[in-house]
Image (cartoon, rainbow, N blue to C red):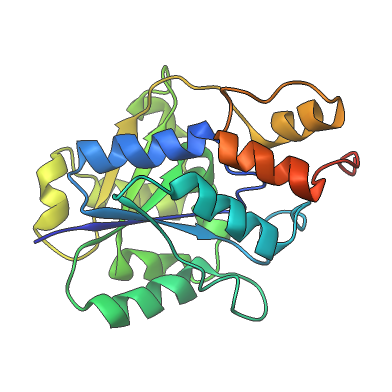
Length: 220
């Protein structure tokens, strides 16, 4: 059965590390599609610098030309805090028994118990944890709080093809190619009027310039 990846984030701005994560995991797990989902009101961090509408527009520009990437605007159009469990519930109702895969970084996974109704996520999707090079499974497991460690141990699956066997419920990991780019560092470069080439798509750079985004320093 074809599987769909779901990758949410503030994308403030979206950059090549985001896109590479989506591309690598789509390849490794043979995902039919990865949907990029810009968050409107993130529950675990300060409000993004750019508006939801600007971040959605940049995400669409970044995904253009890659048939395996799609942009899902549902969180931008939803009032209130953007909870992943609400998004997964909606997508599950739309996609029936299609396997769904929630993509996230290791840092986000370690903090999963702080997410709204976090235990329900396993009923709605698989979770694929993207690990930085040199971040071994043993280190990931040792960083997990007790309740999450129990879920991780019970659900961990090492065979990528198992993504398609059931609609949800497994945890997978994938070691990414090293690509050290962060939105925070990019915003600092923009503030300092430094070049952004080869860090994010040219279309996104042009959009940032056109709309004069990120010209004020981040709050401390």
